[in-house]
Length: 66
Image (cartoon, rainbow, N blue to C red):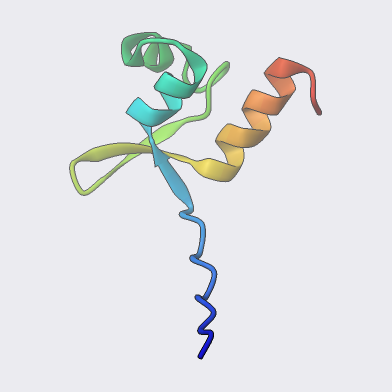
């Protein structure tokens, strides 16, 4: 019997720390760049998060892929 797993939904947010790791900058630098040159972060449950869609769009524009 072959059971197929359902695709897991992609999260709508990414932690600020993870976004900073992906870009190679410190979180303090990201906070200084907000909101004009880095997607704005909000607090959710004691963790600072960024919209994953906005972050990926911002990153693509910085890399010239947009």
